[in-house]
View 1 (cartoon, rainbow, N blue to C red):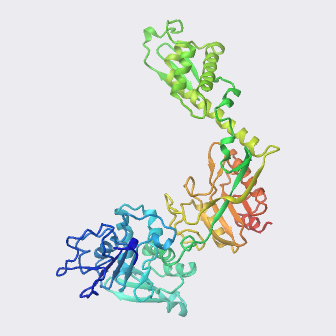
View 2 (tube, rainbow, N blue to C red; view 1 turned 90 degrees about the vertical axis):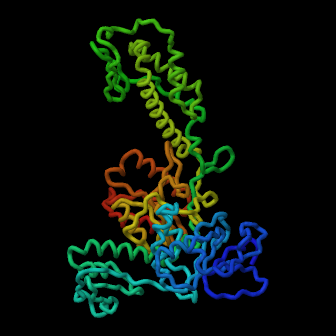
View 3 (cartoon, rainbow, N blue to C red; view 1 turned 180 degrees about the vertical axis):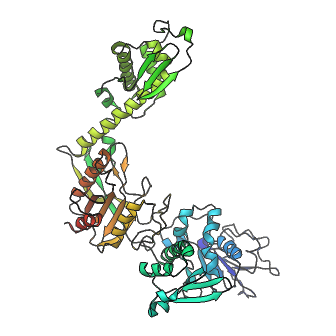
Length: 551
């Protein structure tokens, strides 16, 4: 064993005799060969440690990456504790060979399966995120000593079970045993539970127990898929998605959104420096000053009735330029040069004072509210400027764009951890074991993609995830809902929108950039803005099928 791998194997057996001069230490009650040895020293010769109960009793060996046991364990707590020893890996770092990025447990008895299946909760307590676990533990029992992989039947505890609902062939797949508290129903481990078969199982149980049985079946069936199969990502299957590129400054770039507007904010001076009465208004009454900002009514009650006359002529050392500088400092924006922002704010204040007749002293009294109105106005103008700049940069005559694999989002080798996981359905072709959360309509779209013969595998694209596919747009990046690799090598992207949203400006802009991404790919990429039923009357499945079959 190479020095870089030393101190990585722990054996838990009894009465073992070691060869002379072997790099092995026995740590038992009688043989304490680690006493006085610093196993953290890189020059330490020990490569293997053999124990009986040392690990269970709390002995610490932080370098354990491989765990082997020939012991029979029936305590779930003991099993979780022992397996946890190889999950800490204090000096672990990502290696090029995926096999070196995992810890391993070799066991010889099937009693360990229950312990591994309960390890999820233990890992969460140890600091893992719940969504990481299926990608962290790959297989309930990855490797059994002897090479035989065992699967567990699905068991249900119910008061009654009606076998008459099943055909004679189906009855051979089910075992029913009478217990002291009811029936123990076992669906054999090698049985494929189709939706029709699942429905029969549910109907065979008493009505009051069906919801519980349905949930148990969903969890167990999904666990079969999550833990017992190898996902394309785990198998190292390639999954690259080309990005849209822009030719600018004599080079191609995928970060083209920075070219949508002038980097120092000159665009701001192209817009009118003014606030309408609907955006900002001051109205004096006998006891208060009433301010409206974007239709939201605010009353300033700090003015006494006896003084609530006219403050416009009160002497002050504030000036319009001074107020403009103060307001600019309250709403900093790194995308706009300070002198440009001060110039815009000064012109806006002059407009309020001269054209709208609002006294400077009244603006001073409401300067914090005025600050919010000006900030919102600049944000509105910035949104418009970016939309205009996006159109000019990507779509006007002379723009050079392309979509190819020189710049790609690469899903392979990435750690896909959704903030919220969709758990109800186990999909057959999802690239990762976890699936990001979806609403009811998105689930329908995912099922259609998952069942398409033309699809090799797909991924639920997570919005704002560091490894997700996106297209830069004005104001924010666009993260489509689904990305699929077709068997012919093409990439299909589907963005699903409810019928009430498909015609709004945001959806139109996403469709526009998506169509440009497709058009610039020379037939390598497909983009679909899908809805439950489109303006041609096509259903969701028809829209996706037509897009996939298009050339």
